[in-house]
Length: 277
Image 1 (cartoon, rainbow, N blue to C red):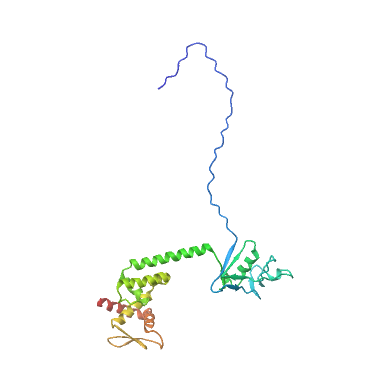
Image 2: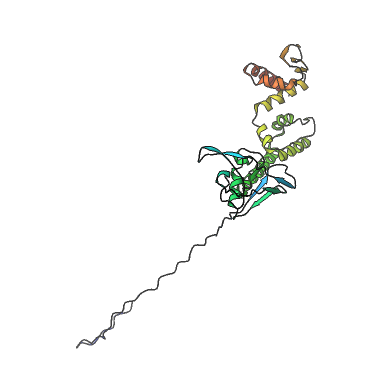
């Protein structure tokens, strides 16, 4: 530890006069947070839902809609040089212009607010209950596409990971020959999972799918007998349910087994199949 320096005794040494100086510290600059610049374009695109061909002209004559703000039915008309799309607010010299979709698409610029209003209010717009055209919402479309991809992935995983015995009911529902090799059954199911993932996944949770599988197997193992006019017990030939003319006996039997009365029959069929396995 450094010892303080000792001064010889006597008159204290005069200290130099120091002027007080106010020191101002320069402000510390903080880095501004990096922000992603998002400028949302007001341009938009509308597309024909189906068909339309190379050129499709949107009907304009006598187009009326209910205006909620005024509580009355009003006529729509697109006139590029008018500020309003309502016919009763347009000038006497207003000139109507055709609205044309080319190759199923119509691009609307930011400086065409009247055209956008006309399309948004038009009764043929899907958003208004129509079926001819719709606004292309890239965000919604991207989310829907992503959801579809996830659903396909889930369906494929279900085919791969589910025990073949648990897949048979679904295979029968989709009319796949369950006498085929296991690899062929899975391949056929995989094709269905890719082409219609929603219906494929719903089949696993449907009671009627399981009922159909039990009924079909019961017919194959001669527990049941299906004829054009009835479904019967094979051994006793006693009628279980009548089949109306022109209808599928299996469909009628499935609907019957979904009722309270038919539930006991379905349970009996399931027990008989288990004894055969």
